[in-house]
Image 1 (tube, rainbow, N blue to C red):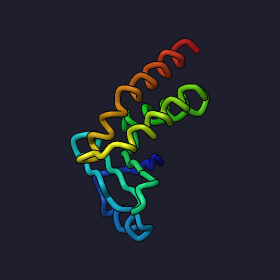
Image 2 (tube, rainbow, N blue to C red):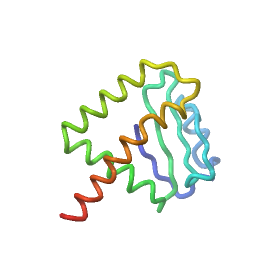
Image 3 (cartoon, rainbow, N blue to C red):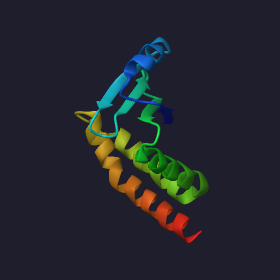
Length: 118
């Protein structure tokens, strides 16, 4: 996953054609969730999440990333979770994303607590 921060993610005119020219497909448009957009490759092996500058989700994504970078056990747990989830046939990608949510939220909470005690 890649996090891309733009001035205003709702202004797709600024980046949509460039993303499509680079062969990324717009897969998620969530105006009610911090104007989140998600693109992916045709092979589904790269996901680019786009948020506007100042979105609180940016900090959450970075907390999660940094925690996994620095904690091998949790990184392996997340990897195994994703491998196991990939074996299922999902009727839509939201179900897959929802299946990861509990683990992700736990990691973010651990990272916040650790950050607060540092």
